[in-house]
Amino acid sequence: MCDERERENQQRLKMAAAVSCDLRDQAAVILAAKDSLQRVIGEYMQDPGQQKAAAALQYIEQSVHRLERINMNLQDISRCAAGQLIPAWQPVCLSEACRQLCEQAALFAQGQNLRCRLPKKAVIVPSDPYFFDRILLNLLTNAMQACPEGNITVTLKSDAGWVLVAVDDQGPGLPPQRLAAPFEPVYRSQTSCGQLGLYVSHLLAEQLGGSLQAENLPAGGARLVLRLPVRDELGQQAFFAPDAMQEQYRQKRMRAEFSVLVQG
Image (cartoon, rainbow, N blue to C red; front, side):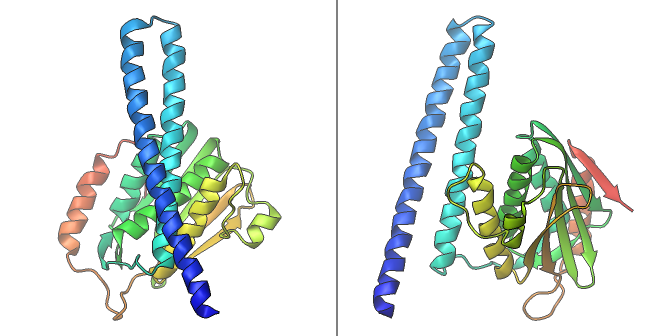
């Protein structure tokens, strides 16, 4: 019975991998067709039709990026289930990672005001940069879907042996049934991309020795909090090159092109 269940699981993993490859290939084809159409429109079409076509092409590009995020989440789930996604521990400057990821997400913001609250001194912990990037990007995607307009705030701080990364939004908050199990995957929903992303983020956070928590804010909106330990598996703090990383963080933070609020 166990062997049969294992064979079924392996078959599902292979199917998910095949679907992921098909999604990736189709996304590339759609983007290539979009680029070709954009060149034709720019050459032969005049305003105001050109503006309407440009808006449609932008919507196509955003939809393809959403498809790519779903595909990456499917890949992460498959690799986690197969035991192939294991953290590659190294010192990671979470301050710089938060800044870069928020800057990246701001490119896709529409009615949102994305803000990032960072400490003056860089926060460096043992982590895996891929894991952290996937978690925070999923949390930002979820907040942007839940909050079409208003503020989305990312706050990084240390707290008694842990590092906390909180993502607050001014959306409607999580409904009671969702708040009871915020990280369970939902496959048939208009927001399934974000909810599948939360499931993946929960899996990755646990592999980093941390956790993911969700709550509704008293003033409205939701808060998702990632908790990560500041020590590695051997109990050693990962401040291996603080001076160089601190200086790099300070220089890059000064060049940030979005709203960065530095905490005292």
